[in-house]
Amino acid sequence: MKAFTALLRASVVACAGLMSMTTASRAEDIVVTHYGSLLYGVPYAIAMEKGWFKEAGVDVDFKWFEYVPSMDAYSAGKVDAVTITNGDALVTGSSGAPSVGILINDYSNGNDMVVAKPGIKSVADLKGKKVGVEVGFVSHLLLMNALKSANLTDKDITIVNVPTDQTPQTLKSGKVDAIVAWQPNSGQALKLVPGSTPIFTSKNVPGIIYDMLAVNPKSLAERRADWVKVVKVWFKVADFVKNEANIDEAAKIMSARVGLKPEEYKPLMAGTFILDLAGNQKAWAKAESLESIFGSSKTVDDFNQANKVYKAPVKYAEYFDPSLVEEAAKAPK
Image (cartoon, rainbow, N blue to C red; front, side):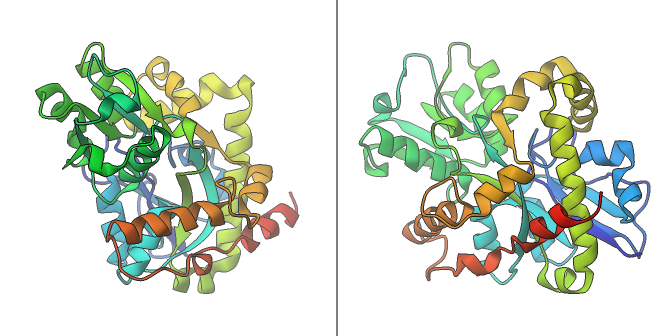
C-alpha cells in the first residue's frame, strides 16, 4: 500500500523546518504536507495518535512546513498533497502546479486578524496609517475586506509588505500601525504590544478563507480509493473535535504538535470552524455566496487578478472534486 505526502497551513512555533508525523516515510506511503498554523490541518494529528489511518487501511506520512514553504514543496512535487487555502490553491495552479481540492477541512472563524496598535479602535481609524501584511496572500485578502467594511480602499492606507511570521515584531517596532496575520502570529502580536486590539477578523467574513486538502491530480487519479479513505478519516476527526466531551483530549494532542500547552491552545480552537460531513456538503454546493467554496473562490480569483498575483482568470471550478466526500459518506463504516 503506497503512502501519501501532504502539507497543512500552520505557522507553528514548534515547526522549524520539517517534522514527520509518522516514524518513517516509506516508498509505499502517501505523503501529506501540512503547513503550520495552529489549527489548520493540525487535527489530523488526532488520527495519527489514535491509529485511524491504519484502521482505514491507508498509510499517511505527514510533513510540517511553514505556509509558503509548504506550497513550494507541493509545487516542486515533493509531496502528494497540501492543506492550503482555496485562494492560494489558485495561485500555485496558475504558476504551474495545479491541484484538486477533495476535502474542505475548515474555514477561518477569527484566528485571522487585523491587529492594531493602542489608540486605533476600528477599521475606519486605519485611514492614513501603515498596515503590515504579506502582499498577495490570504491576509491581504482579509485586509481588503476589512477596508471595504469601513468604506475605505487600499489607497486610504499605506501597505507595507511584511512576511506573516514577522508581523508581530514589526508591530512592536512601531514601523506600522497595524498588521494582518493568522494564529499564532496574530496572537503573538496581541501579546507583544500591550493594548493592541483585533479590529477585524475572519469571523466578520466567514467563508472568505477556506482550508482544504488539495491533491496532485496524478496522485488522485492513481490512488483515488486511498484518498477517499483519507477523507473518511477526516470526518471521524471532525466529529471527535466537535464533540465537547473530547475537547480536553483534542487540545492535548493538537497542542503537543505546535509546542503549546493545552490551556494555551484551547482558547484558539474556536477561531477555526471545523467542517464535518454536513459542513462539507453545504460548502460544496455551488453558489455565489461565501458559504460556498465556489463563491469564495470567485471572490479570491477577482482579488488575485486585481492585485496582479496572476494575470488571467483561473478556471477555479476545475480545482475542486466534491465527489470524494460523497463516496466517503456512502462507504461502509
